[in-house]
Image 1 (spheres, rainbow, N blue to C red):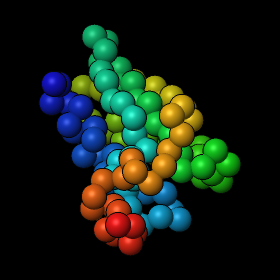
Image 2 (cartoon, rainbow, N blue to C red):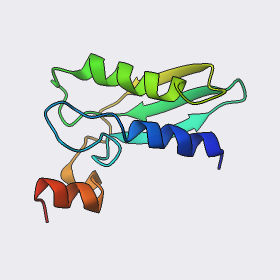
Image 3 (cartoon, helix red, strand yellow):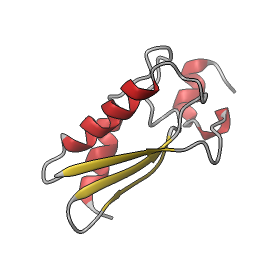
Image 4 (cartoon, one colour):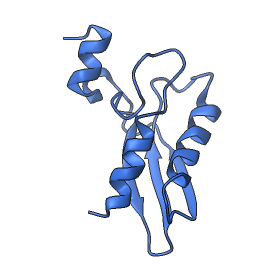
Length: 101
């Protein structure tokens, strides 16, 4: 795997939904991170709910997180609701932090 994907993931762990005290990566909102031959990051993500009031902000924060990685020239963030997010997508740490067992 491209080491830059790991760096993007580390940056994504600094992005938080303002209403939830867990980063979006551990929440399970990031479905895929890929980098193409032109050094463009392609990220597929979702939200905890389709009507999320900070959707635009989160998408832009994800895009900026990818662009902060060296040699990433462009970043495309695709928002999807298929499959819909649910609590089982969270990391164990996130479930513990939020009190879901």
